[in-house]
Image (cartoon, rainbow, N blue to C red):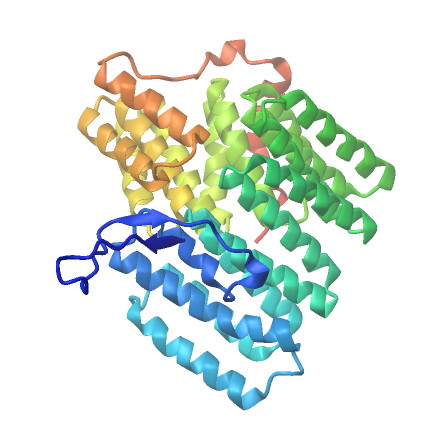
Length: 440
């Protein structure tokens, strides 16, 4: 939060508010409930739209605090419904098709039902929305309220999910030590409640903190231990989830061959459509870097056509645009770039930044330097000033190459140099039925 540093004028009565001094954040348990969502305004205090949105996030949390304090059966229905209605009226300050308005409206609808599971899931959905758009203070507060509500309602599985969400948010915000603590707590709670799927996902978050501290070998060891445990449990879905975590680790570590092998092992046994789509985006990038462009294009096409998430679809479209540029198909490049730009709106900020990076790379490859520069600068603007994410590092690298008029940066190899295993998987993937990869 920020405090006012007054500078009185001659009459001693008028204070100036143009100089703001930072204050230490108060303890959450001893502060006004929900105040912390306004920490997202630090540095942009004069942004009227940002202030309006922070206020709406604060107001939408107020009914949830009542449920935490008094329980689902302890809040009078009439009073609760009136509170929900008042907040819904405030949402009218945002455009009718605004993503944040839709997310908060969905939350209010679920809170009105006063069904514990639905309410907690809706709170986590808003937390994820805020996280993806860089509003880490709001993301944390929504996740913590969902955790409080899950514990009060004895919804242990959702409690585990909320704890893991807090670990992921801390890592995204750059708080490595806190992220590690929360990830370990999520692992411990999941094991204590025999929530095996959540335990494997929490191990994935713990591995991410290890990578963040510069210890990828420790991250890989943790993930291999999760795979070993999943095999001992004899559950194909859990084995697929463990392979998917190894696939993501390999992608973060720049090991394309391992991405393809782990991703292929996970695809047909993963239960969730979104998990399969995420694996396909990782495999698409890896296969493209190995020069196996037809299989890479197949991965991105599947995601584009069949994934439910707007964020995944736009990443799939952008990946396909880059492939079209790299194989020299200018007509398809223009067609796919147009489709990607048309789909950018519903995607969250992180996905838009990733898509603009791929579009910038694609424009660079085809020699459209002005368009490439626009996309890369938009990537950096969407990411904001904080954190050295892989997307930021890559965007800055490509932008430097563009400004220096060097050759377009590409990690793509000749397909002849691709390992035999990767080529075999690519051939099978090209001919695999859609329904075996991403279900309707």
